[in-house]
Amino acid sequence: MKILVADDSKTNIAIISAALEKMGHVVFAASSGEQAIELFQQQSPDLIILDVIMGGIDGFECASRIRKLDNNDWIPIIFLSASVDDISIAKGIDAGGDDYLTKPFSEITLAAKIKAMQRISDMRQKLFDTTRQLYLLSSTDSLTGVYSRLQFDRSFKEIIGTADCYHHALALFFIDLDNFKNINDSFGHHIGDLLLVEVAKRLKSCTRSNDFIARLGGDEFAMILNEIENAEEARYVAQKIINTLDVDYNLESHNIRSACSIGIALYPAHATTQENLILNADIAMYHAKASGRNNYQLFTTELNDKYKQRMNLEHALKFALERKELSLTYQPIFELHTKKLVGLETLLFWDHPQFGIVSPSIFIPLAEEAGLISQIGNWMIRTACQQAAQWSLHKLKDFKFTINISSRQVRHEDFYQQIVDIIADTRINSHLLELELTETVVMNYTNVPILETINKLHNLGIGISIDDFGTGYSSLIRLKNLPINTLKIEKSFIQDAVTSPHVGIIVSYLIALGKNLGMNVIAEGIETKEQLEFLQTKACPQGQGYYLSKPLTTEQMTNFLDDRVNELIRSASQA
Ligand code: C2E
Ligand code: CA
Image 1 (spheres, rainbow, N blue to C red):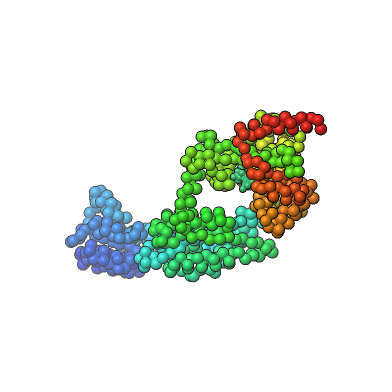
Image 2 (cartoon, rainbow, N blue to C red):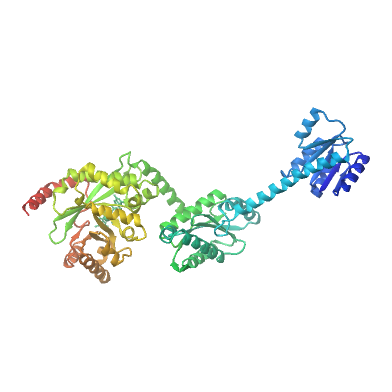
């Protein structure tokens, strides 16, 4: 061991040094407390022996100064003293000492005390090694080998500090895989893990060695580009990452494609603190996801404004139900060649005292994200069904009352039971109901629970229609094998059908396709006489749109129905 001995008596130093050297230790001798502190800093000893009474600072003071300098390393300290009373023992321990040796002492006592201190020292070393190992383990992500979230948090401040010192700019990237959950669900977690490893490798190939990559959890990675010149450089790297990740992965003979979305914030241009930089990269990421995925977004103040607006809306939405700000409208659906009323589509809207009328295409996705969709959806379906019962719609023959259902809503485990309960409570005929689901929900064949729900609803007699048909990718075989009653052709097709021959052909094809599969076909968004006539010549069975009728409030619809329902009931009973 390296042992530091401090005593102002030369004779004592000589005796102790000789004894220690005989035992095989290396001795550094100091003749005062001040010199002992100097030697402590130069030599990093493993043990310190301090005489209590010395000229200049005494042993206690010397020990407490050493304790301030030793970075919690806790190098063992033994005090040397001629007499040891209780008070000095307490004082010595307070000053940071570990043991006492009374003068005069035998070599046997000295050796024994040193042995005890050696044990403390060994334990200290072990603790140090374990802590270091733990630190290393916690600093890397065990799956991919890039840094861990913990290390990201630990290093970020330091990286910002260095950038600040050298006046460098940094770019923080948040990178999120677009369909990782689907891949995990359809191919299993093992393939999901292999994909993450490959993604980490590809990310490394896009960066320089002094850039920092971490996996923050799940399929989320963070990257810090050091010393960037300008925003262009960040854009260049982002595009490179997008191109590199959007190439098929061959994982145990599965060919998998997994693109990513990236949010970027620059230091110091967009934020100067770690917290704000992370928040801004997150905001940029949100917009990357919202603008169709497989793209990157650089933070801007406009994005920030949009984000704040969204947060305000999301907050207000939490109170929309209890403050009775949500209402329903109903758009009539007609048989196109007779103009007979054959159905109603229920639409939700939100009238907020400050924001005005908010479109469901804006607040439904918000409700999904905020976990409010089940509550709002449940209220909406219940209110609509109560209204349908009040209008006695079940008395009409071949009449459909349709309700839009969002993908998260149908994924909710209680969804089926909610519908069953509402039907029972409102005593509405289940054959009257048709649920509108979007193409992507129905065509997602990897999602078994949704398909089970759809089949169970169908078995109850509830119709299923595919909303906005033509905008997704439907497989014909799949369309044929699913219990689908209706295809609703997306309004953008109808609106271009007359002006663009190409779109006209597509619409004719979609109508024929639905009819050949034995389904009902509804054209959405008919706004002009020409569009209606075009659809009539193509024998499209049904349609809706502003030209035929705008969505009507409950009161307007009650008036509208008054005559027609009686008329329809009469014709139904005559048939
Ligand atoms: P969607 O299901 O495609 O509904 C049709 C939308 O087009 C409605 O807008 C309707 O007012 C509008 N529309 C009807 N006829 C015409 C027309 O001739 N021209 C044009 N330009 N538009 C027309 P709205 O009410 O703003 O709803 C937007 C979307 O929000 C709906 O699209 C639907 O996806 C969703 N949504 C509406 N209500 C609900 C609901 O209760 N639950 C869920 N999950 N989603 C809903
Ligand atoms: Ca719809």
